[in-house]
Amino acid sequence: MKYGIAIFPSKNLQDKVNSYRKRYDPHYALIAPHITLKEPFEATEEELQEQIAFISSIANETEPFSIFINKVGSFHPVNNVIYLKVNDSEQLKSLHDQLYTGPLDHQQPYNFVPHLTMGQKLSDEEHSDVLERLRMIDIEHEETIDRFQLLYQLENGSWTVYETFRFGKGV
Image (cartoon, rainbow, N blue to C red):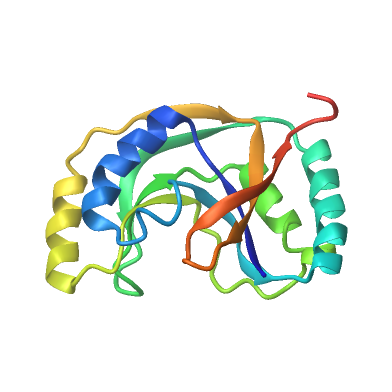
């Protein structure tokens, strides 16, 4: 089965991102707005149990941290993805890096750029037009992150939460 690990931000931020995603992201109905911590990976049921124990230990050692969002970015020319940039933080980078060690160790397909996708699979012309429009929005957002989710992919391609991991011992 295919799994992934992500942070789902507050409902308020998800609603803001979804107001754009429903127009510009064909994956809108497959997964809620999220920050990908670990790209999709395959695991058997036996492997998953070991991985969950490992993920739980990482969560227990992680303290809640803040994320800041204040601009729209793009991965163009690599691909036509438009996103809200999550400012780099040492805690977020550390969490990401830990989720690629131990029983979760495998090659990272991309450099880690924390973000919330607003649009993707746009033509070059559409990407340019939408990006310029979205760069004009005034976005200043900060929130505290105190959990992340292990997800699995259903047969229809959508993603759903398998387990939620809260940060800190007994928090």
